[in-house]
Amino acid sequence: METGYTFSGSWICLLLVISTAFAKAVDNMEGNTTAPEKAVRQSRSLCAGEQDYVHKRKLVVLESLSGLGINCTTDSVPHIALLASGGGQRAAVGLVGSLYQMEKEHLLDSLLYLGSVSGSTWSMSSIYGDPQWSANLDAAVSRLSGPGVRLEDALAWLGERAKEEHFSLSDVWGVLTSAGIMKQMDIRRLSDEASRNATNPYPIYSAIEKYSYSNGPIQGKWFEVSPHEAGFTELGLFIPTSLLGSRFQNGELLEEKTEMDMVKLQVPGQIDGAAEHYLRVYNGLNTLVALTRSTIKDPTALSDLDKLQKILEDRDIANQNESVWLESKSSEERQRLLGQWSLELLAAVQTWSQSLEDGPGMNRPVSMLAKQVLPLIIKWEWGTTGNFLYQYQDSTVPPYLRSTERFHLTDAGLLINVGYPSFLGEKRDIDLIIAPEYSAGDMFETLTLARDYAAEVNKPFPEIDATILEDRDWPKGCYVLEGKEKEPTIVFMPLFNRHNCKDAAEFKANMEKFSTFQRPYSQEKIDFVLETAKANIKTNKETLLREIKKAVLRRDNKM
Image 1 (cartoon, rainbow, N blue to C red):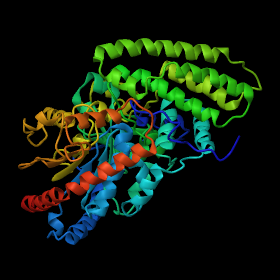
Image 2 (cartoon, rainbow, N blue to C red; image 1 turned 135 degrees about the horizontal axis):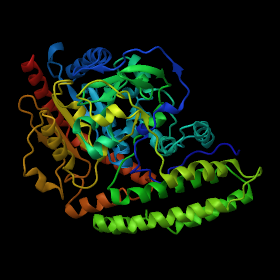
Image 3 (cartoon, rainbow, N blue to C red; image 1 turned 90 degrees about the horizontal axis):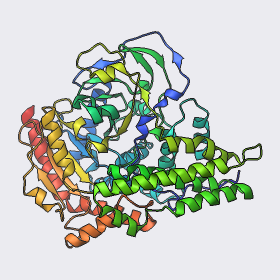
């Protein structure tokens, strides 16, 4: 194998729209049988581990507020969460920029929590690889422009997964997103963070359960994962994060399996279902061809890849003109066109795979691509994870979750593209939510969807002034949704806005320039999103300080 190659952003087709890498927990790894024990916690309150972390983190927040000239006591430390929206690479890069400027403005340590969905999970799971990231965000910014992961390391990880019984697309997408977009192969376990000190805000990752998302009820949809626990937010049922993927029955742990690593926690973004299937297949194939080509020299193998590359080039819809053209079509028309193109693409790829000469001289990476990865893409085989609620004896658990041994966790952005559900209500008792918005489409949809969700599960959410929604074509740089009593206040900050777009036409042009239908960002685009996100925080610093002060008073009144 030729050495020294790395993933390059110019190679990797943007892996948006794919089901979350949460979907493949490590049920495929050999585990150790243990004696049955009750491991499911049923509660509406924080677990002991999170309580302890939050208590320590409040001391950091207290010191930070003092440095900002905000008088505060231990009892009146406000509960502040930054909730980053999804939005593919736009969100991944934007979150790094927002956090970077929060630190420069001495606001970062006012955060008790950090929550992510979809694309923002890419960067969140990456930056938490550094136990001291809050004081070292220069490294996170530099990594976005760095050389990336050695191909040998990425292929070695994928090769090991391919040997396992339940090898699936979740493994493929996990390594491609982790190595190709965030340029980091982080094989630590999320539960490793449970023993850390409180240097950083407490992280909460989100997903949704696929069947419940499609069929209900709402209580079975939202799934959250922290360093200490993983489980269903509205059901109040959790297990230790280290046991996610293990075998359970009636709440008892039957077989403990190795916890998933952070490569599998890369949660790619999502777009509308009309383009989803085609772009999943096309982007994955194009990425894998580039990856495989860069590791081989055999002329026959390269010739085989040339043929597959030609098939892909003839069916490329990810250039700027065609992406804008597609977005101008109705959902029904996109569904028809892309459904037809998907069938044509898969048929051509299957013909290519069958044409390869099989034998001892066949190149190993090409063999893996043709015989192990392509069948998964053609059949669209995603991984699932062990269901800890299997045969759980509680009438509040939806019948589907009681009857299936495995469930499928997928992109939470399909439901709400911000992790509001985990932060509403009494459990975390949030006073202030800082919400940088990186989504595409209707700029205020995350707010209205969260409002409707909150109403359905009977949780407080601040009122949305109807006049705000009239700004969707050219939003302001900051909106404050004032919490009255139990509702949190929300500071909502669209990435593109009236501060950085002179009119609605420029706003639309930027949304198109950074649309979902495109390859990974050039260095110029990465820098643009970074600087835009930084400027938004800097511009809105005074608003943030004002709301933080009000949150202190609010917490003091509660106490």
